[in-house]
Image (cartoon, rainbow over all chains, first blue to last red):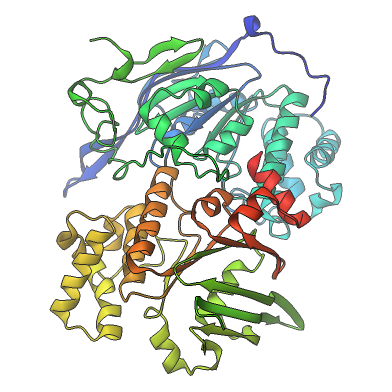
Length: 335
Length: 263
């Protein structure tokens, strides 16, 4: 990490991305006429903001809607309802033709380093493609850019003549990162960028992402199911459960003082390597309920160790519990 | 051989012959598992940990892969000297196995019931109805409240965690002395992982079996293992009890690994 990074002033935080009451319902078609018989509420009323230059981690189990949220922010999926504001501009309903210039500022790193690179394109072509689409620079400038990006992510410049199958998972993910950086974006959305990698390679890629954040002044939205990865890289963490936010808090606050019972269970479920530490482990019963038929009231009440009657009836709203610490749980609201 | 040793692996070598090249996936591995204890094999992908377990079961993918040398002694009997027929009786009967991918390790075209009854009828000689009863019991043990209904369901109707529980039920169906669990929780979410680890401990106590746990997750190791071996490049680089290895790792690779994981 470079030491010359600008110190982040807490008062000067500028919102770069904001989502307001965002919803994504996928229709379930059924019957002979393929009528809509129900909806999978993948993302259900989520409001969030991301400050410029920070890393917001989004954690949740599979099926919690975290990837859908990330894809909607990229406008790879159209939201059913709600607003997405990027740099003060509402991008939730703009036309497809207007989205493309926008992608210059927002790029994505995908989970699977094997599926996200075209096997029939050389690495040089892969990294150059976003620049071609965005019509940046001359051919020579683009080539120079490809070389500098490859070197920046820790690959040799000869790599540009090779094809994806010649690289390991970690190297491929570096190529994916170089591609995402090629348009000099402001925001990078990483959808589980390290979960397919080995632990030792994971930390290399995470460190690279941190270095790049300083060099390119990037804002990260980091989606993961792994709390330890998120802990390493995030400034703030949002916990999702069944399409809704359970808790949003600064990293240290969240890990030291988790308020939502789900966050507590998540943190306690991570096996610890400290064998002398005695702790009460919370083991949740059952599975994640189906998002097609979510429980009434608080979505977590079916597995919550602290559930009471109100939880089954009333949906908890986000309540401010401290500096940037929000939680959606009835334990912290007076009825 | 000491009385409390269940499995003894000596100088196990499994090589893959590809073209003119020899890939030494497992290159002279020794370890022992004591009765009722859990041994964890830790290592990155490609370190040979899965091949070690497949070699014990003699499920190394042929014809390129071959066990070239060594001995695998289960309760004093060398498994590598058994015929295929005899080995069939060991698999699923004396050694149960749980794989990483709960999506692919169950057969999608048979019901859970058929798949759980199969080893019971084959190895234990139970009748259909006896096997059904025993299957229901096993499913209840691994935490299916409506076990009778679950018996009639197909794998795709179950979630990942439920499928892994079915796999554990099948693996434990014939009271195996040894349960080999190859990354049993890697494909699962943390809250479900906690459930499965808890269940494995419970099952181990109930059946008094030994577990060979293969994983790259040190947290899981710290939670489950009594003894640990660390593999790298097909060889064992360090072997110690849990406490020794987590508190005072010796080999540079282990030290590096720990640093990464505990960061």
